[in-house]
Amino acid sequence: MASKSPIELADLPNEIITAILSLFPTRALLPLTPLSHRIHALILTIIHTRITTLTSSPSSSKQKVILECYHPSAKLSTPYFFCDYLYTEPFSLTSPSTSASSKLQQLRDLYTHYKPTPPEGDRKVWRPRPAGGWSWVPISDVLGNGEEGAELVSQDIYLESHELFSQLMSVVNVVKTGPKKDLFLSCVTVGEGLVRVWRDWLAARAEDFREGRDGEGREDGKGLLWSSVDRHVGLRLKVLEREDMVRDRGPVLVSRDEDPNVGYTLQYEDLVVRSTQLLLMIEDSMDREVGNTGKAIVIVS
Image (cartoon, rainbow, N blue to C red):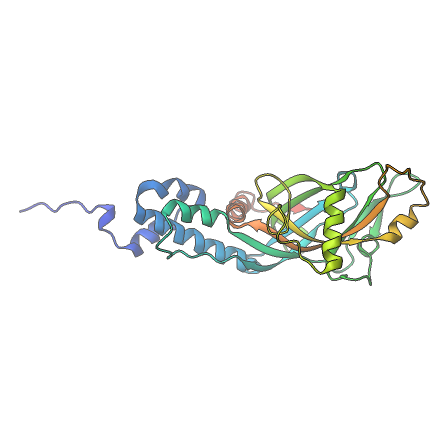
């Protein structure tokens, strides 16, 4: 009887290979891409499908993206914000003129867009008292109401004459909500960073808003303020100059060679997150939830 030759991986149809590869998490798939052009293409398809599925319908799995953005000194008094999904940038898997390595790089450069939303209900945050200590205050007292763009999350920045910049710490987490919205079964950080918001940058952005320009052509790319050099997380901000903030601080004499005191309101129009990084963190969040069944995380805000 003639012996049958063994079946090799290359002999299997794409459907079976895809079914096998789909059993692996994304972190395990990435090292397999150099095996062959065929495996590379199948893995790209699997990863792209996971990105579009997990990022576009997080509500089905109770996965939520939350944003914290605050001055380092105001960490305890600044609330976190749930973010609504907007869209994921398009990506073509069938472009014949693009090399395999270029397609992988293009997939890595995809971003998913979210809109930070003001909190609902009676959430409260810690706020320092003028006389010392801390107190609970309604979140509406922190955010304010009735101003232009009130549907957008906003934050005020004030620079005295000697200050060249302010600082913003931004943290984006993926959480899975429990029975209550503020009770989290798991929490993983997608990206975080501390960025300087320069006086000149604020003035240029405020001028863009006054003149009806969106700032897309500026050197920071896509009109975004990136939270770190790896560009996992970025914010598109609308900057409004606030003369009333300067008046409320009281009159200050400024010499001829000093900059004036300035105040601005930053409105968060768009949160962008690197799609592949978001996918990896969502998978980590799912694994962490399985490993911590019965435990919960509470973020007070």
